[in-house]
Image (tube, rainbow, N blue to C red):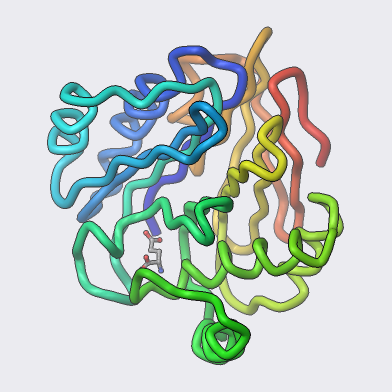
Length: 222
Ligand code: GLU
């Protein structure tokens, strides 16, 4: 289980996320990545190895936008590669970062693939992105969609979702894996460890198992 970070409402989003990931570096990881929404599209950068490699990619081509999520991965399902590095994106609309293991990922993936979903990684985590696409396609609002997804998955998880369907929020949830939310003046933040957020705000809320939250720039709903 490695690191999750998120930010919404912060114009320096990409560099804030990279900095927050660096604060989680002590946990160890094999690859990393960040996504933001810019001009109505999901923009993504990933790299295998040290965060310095992701940093170098971002120096060449900065990710713009004031909403984003990031991850440092410790592979459990699927080898160490850029395509297996998080964030995962489904249908160019829904992006996720996940810590932990989705135990029933195989059966979910088979069902989703049979329904036409195209997977682009070997990870257990990617099913989360497709489950959210499925729920949004069915017309569900974020809270109902999250409840629907949580009802289908087994395992230990903390995850964050960013979607162009609802670009004014991040969706987060946890079970048996830590997740903290930071509330700032103009922005809110997500971290799998409060250490990632402590330099951004003093107001930190810890989610409990089975909690989910909608994180907006100006506050959170748990
Ligand atoms: N099971 C996921 C994967 O292999 C997440 C691993 C992690 O917690 O970093 O991609």
